[in-house]
Length: 514
Image (tube, rainbow, N blue to C red; front, side):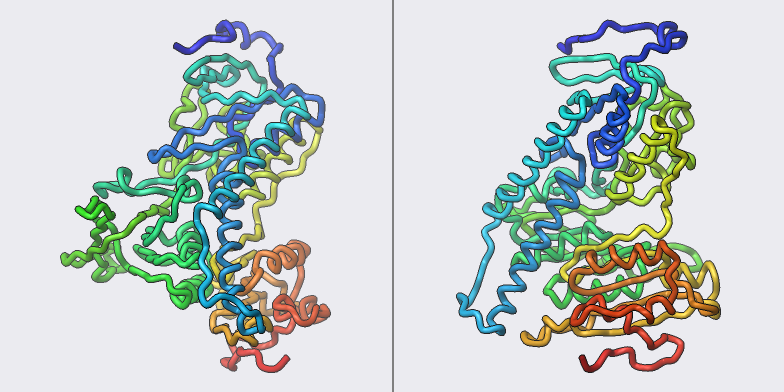
């Protein structure tokens, strides 16, 4: 039986009283919510954070810090790095290192070290909240009205009264609908980093960055990996770059089941997971109708991971009691320019907010700016344009600004110029690694100084490269600025400032020489 810590106060009480317990209550202990709470605490405000992790269907749970820290950016980047180390070991022989004929990774050791680091971050977040006098409640929150939040766990129940409430509950992975055995036998990104033993022969279902990144590091760790994609990969990214990413994964040894959809998952007599799928026959653009081959494919796997989308964690919040409206299709919270919801005094930031980029740094910055507007007199709004991002596949893709397709749509083919190049990283030369997918594209206005509209970089350390050039893009850099910049030699990043061949010219964009 839950224990009510604070007696319930009627709506009349806080409708006519300004004496709230907290100036700000943040529901959600992820990157954005924590950033907002800590920023508000700096101004001497009474702040609380309420966070609760509902176990995944497979029982995975974690501590304070949200998706990024526990089951997203951080463990993903560490797995990605582990896979790159394996590639480095193979290259090392060409550089004269005397190494065993075959190097293998111990999953349990890797996963244990990874979990230890994540738990240290969980503890660090709790210490930071305590140091900043932010009250932390490990409880599941729901609205009684716009100022009253009920928090419950299996052992207690509290009522918190707050003048302002920020929703920062993020998203959780979805399971596919109408696929028997999907939930019973499958896992998601909520589970992959918490597996005690190697996933073995793995099927990853999905075409987004989570699916491609996971397939990439699993294969890089030496596992038999297949990627099932219903339509295109990396929707929303520049599609020429996306195609090259897919090709690079194939060359890494990832098997593709393209144009396929799962039908069912069942346990075979041998104890493996038998996956049955259909293959797309064709797509009629006029009728917008998919046609599928009646003949089914089938294969056994040790692990099936679903990466078919994410959904907002709003089901248990009882948003209707506060008058908070959500988008009918996505279920995300509708927000305005100031991150305000349809209910005065209730705000939403991060992935749960409709129309916002689903990226950790975006949530962090939005959270801090919101706290500054609420408590420090600031008027600065979050600028959601030209936000950089990176897909951490074995060959990384960094992007900022408009894709080529978007630039053509917003302007026209005659008003843009695309500079591009295929290049070979110096590090690839000694082991003679394939560099056919190392490609750069800069989308510019065609007239005047040719203001840069978008930068897309496929190659080693793309995240590091793109972060720097993102600043230039925000400052209004032009192709002329790019050309007048001295490079750092020898680096992959310098290939950006050496660009001189346009797509329009039809010339071979392959870089030759030093």
